[in-house]
Structures are given as C-alpha cells and as structure tokens.
Image: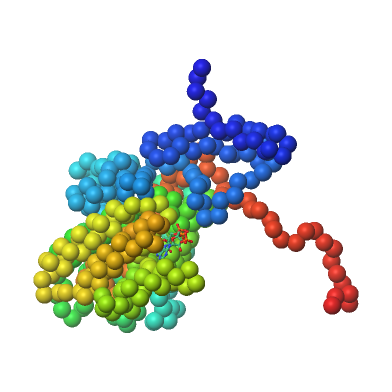
Length: 433
Ligand code: SDX
C-alpha cells in the first residue's frame, strides 16, 4: 500500500478531520501543508514568532541548527568564507550557481558601475541630525532611493527587478560610508572602480582628501569574510519583513527598508553593537560571573547579547569562523590588542560551562565576535549593524526575487486568535460612568 504522505488532524470535539499533505524538501524537516486547514476545520494554527511555521519554500539557504550547518545554494559556509569573495557569493545567492569567469567579471563590472549614488541623495542627507544613528540614516536614504530610481520600480518587470537588485547591492556600501562621514562632518568619498567591494567600502569610510589612503589588505580580507558570513540566513526576522512588505507589490527599495528596520533591533542585527557594549560594561574578566548571573536571573530581563539563537542549538558556524578570523586579524595586526577579545573568549568559556546555558543550548551567535573584528578595523560601534545590513542586502534581495517568481506566493496576511471584548453596543457619553 503506497505510503500515505499526510498528517490527519482531528477535532475531537466533533470528530471533524482533515488530511494534510506532507511535503519533503532537499534537507531539513518535512512540512505538512495546512492551507486547507481553515476551510476544513474552521480553525487557524497558532504559532507566535513562527517557531514551527514554514512561510515559504526556498532554494537559497539551508540551516541545520542541531548540526551547526549553513549552506548557501548548497555550498557550506566554511568553504565559501575560505575560498570565495563577497561579490561572487552575491552572484551565487542571486543566480543559484557559482559564476564562470566571464559571468563573474560581467557581474562585478555591473555592480561596480552602480556604486555611485544620485547627487540629489547627498542633498537629501542634510535633513538628518549629524548625530543620528547611522541605521536611521540608512532607513531614510534607502527609502529615498525609491524617489530617485523611478525607472526600476515596476516589480512585475524582471529587468526592473534585476536593475534594482544591482543598484541596492552596489549602493549600500556608498550609503553606509556616507552615513559615517555625515556623522563625522567629513566630506564624502566617491567609490573607486579599481577597488573590490570590501576595499571600496573601507576606502569610502576612511579616506580623507588630505592624504593618500591605502586600504589595509588584512582588513579588506577580514571584511570580505564578515560580509560573506552575514549575507543570508533563511527566513530570519529581517528577511521575513522584506518578504511580507514586498508581498503587497511594494518596490524593493521600500521593502529593503522593512528589513533594515527589523535588523536594527537588539534581538537581531543590533546585537553586534549590544555585544560590545556588554563587553565594555564587563570591563574585566573577573566581572563576568556577575553578568552571567544576571542573564540567568528570571526576575531580570537582562540577556547576554550575542548568545542564543532561534535555530542554532549547537554552535553557530559563523560565530566559530568569525572567532577564528578575530584571532587571525589580531595576530596579523601584531601591535593591536583588544582586551575585549580576551573577555569575549573567557565569557564564552564560562557561559558554555554553565548549566543554564547548556540546558537551553545557548551558544555564541554570529554577533558575538563580529564586533571585535569591526573594532579592529576602526569601524565605530554605531556602524556595526550598518555593516550587517550592507552584507544582508543581497540575502534580502535574493529572497525577494525568489518570492516574486514563486507561483505559490500571494500577499502575506496572517490571522489571529482574538481574545478581546465580546461584541457589545455603543454607550452614549451621558450613560457612561
Ligand atoms: C541574529 O534568525 C536569525 O537567523 C538571526 C540571525 C541572522 O543571521 O539573521 O542569525 C542574526 O539575529 C542572531 C541573534 C542575535 N541576538 C542576540 O544575540 C540577542 C540575545 N539572544 C536572544 O535574545 C535570543 O537568544 C534570540 C532572540 C536570539 C532567540 O530568541 P528565541 O529563539 O525566541 O529564544 P527565547 O527568547 O525563547 O529563549 C529561550 C530561553 C529563555 O529561557 P526560558 O524562558 O526557557 O527559561 O533561553 C533564554 C530565554 O530567557 N535565553 C537567554 C538568552 N537567549 C535566550 N538567556 C540569557 N541570555 C540570552 N542571550
């Protein structure tokens, strides 16, 4: 008898039941398709935070949280971080395959030629307070792109989608560097086409008109790894925000703003900034137990930033790669020493020996060590999440393009369990207490 690949849900109150087909992917847990649940049983599913809910099928990224596996289009993150470049990973995430030499050269040239921003954007910046958080600057300037690039906002046009994708990937480093220069009251730099993606960002960030600036190759290599490791991560909060926003047909610039907004939160991409603030607050290794105790205290909502993950219940492979890159960078830099790195290593050691963290499978995540590397490169604390947003833009865009081509996708419109007041009649003011 053919295996019945379905789950049967029975409402025991009245015996109503429905068979829900089981769908199997390439890797990872099977899913059962609940789309006819409401029409069959008159009930919704309930899953705040989407702990057990697959919102789409995707070809792009796969995570195995128990095994600590992360694949971009099937390629292990360890191999890509060691052997690839961020621009090549962008091509891979967007197109599904590693590029040939010609394809890589063409794609790189295309991205390079879109790195400048409309000069009107730079006038637009002047409305920001100089001390605005750079993530607020990014929200405003990426959103403003939809007012400068009207020629590519027809999301039903594949060519418009492609040019918007290239513009966003190309211009994020320029906008990011501009946000930093603006906050410092320093002149903006124009991108240099002879530099690669990471080198160009560092140049635009740190070059001054008063002297020659030579990109530090060690920094550029470390940034390349950081960008690759942050490029995509399945249906995380910011990616899901981009998908939900663009499911209404909103243009990609506006939809990426939804991703930037979500990423800014300290529970998500804002954690890298919060980790450094925690390490600075700890100050010395002898203070670590006090902070670990606070993180364990149920009466204290304090959390150890950079620890824990919705999916990784083993090491976040990115955290391990970044920790190693941290070590290599600090070694390469020789005369540079960051006491926070030693505190981070000791905090990791102590936390991972603690039953509270072991029982809850709380391991360092991608944000735990990334700030140490960025500090070593001279990137200021309030720019850490901007770098994350810069790296994740290709993931947001790849997921957006996949959704736009997915025949199953429609406007996202979750339902709810209503627990408010039962229906009641209006009470005239005179009759109220
Ligand atoms: C990113 O989704 C992604 O893929 C995100 C990301 C990506 O690439 O897009 O990987 C990037 O956002 C990484 C995560 C960065 N955030 C932080 O480092 C902030 C600190 N971590 C947490 O707030 C938390 O771990 C989350 C938000 C990451 C995950 O939250 P969950 O899955 O909802 O887990 P939870 O809050 O239900 O916690 C489970 C238990 C709770 O204890 P109990 O109620 O069971 O007793 O673990 C505890 C939590 O109190 N816990 C922590 C903790 N994280 C979870 N306790 C102390 N410190 C922490 N950091």
